[in-house]
Image 1 (tube, rainbow, N blue to C red):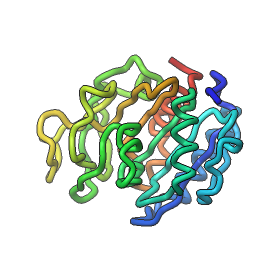
Image 2 (spheres, rainbow, N blue to C red):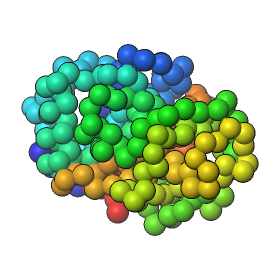
Image 3 (cartoon, helix red, strand yellow):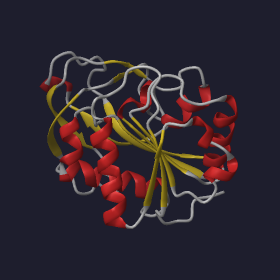
Image 4 (cartoon, helix red, strand yellow):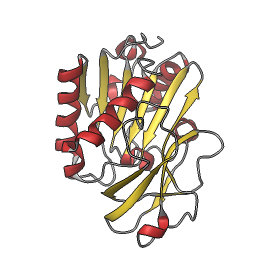
Length: 225
């Protein structure tokens, strides 16, 4: 079922079969607080059985929050694909890019797949597109500390890039002068938003980062343009 055009019900999925981020409890709490403050319900789960047509129907967005490895059943994959292509809103956060490597559609939905990263360190996020609710509030050059993901292939030109990272400002970057971190795309009748940010627990208490997540969720759900 297509999204309703307003963010009312979010399925927050945090299952991991690979690396598990220590920030997941803080991240889950932050999403629940955003829901409480902005009028949407957050249903957090790690149960792949929730991915059915009946369970997904009517939800405003599905969030893969620092998931890793293979986290869906074949039936769950099919249900998620039908839901997104029918108008559902998908958002991936951080290691959502390290998820479902064996499912080609998921790579297309997300836009890129994780390849590696250097150590956590400060750098500068370059906001490329401020005409989007996930980035409109951010400064053009945003100092930030994170785990800077490299990707197997850059997501352009198949996505709308919202922000990149300046590789000259940190050690170990592997993508060169064009290193996207945040982007979005249309997928059938649905929408997909991805941010590679969010490794550290401290990120989820940061007001700018919370607005970044909220804007991405609202855009994915069709509740903000």
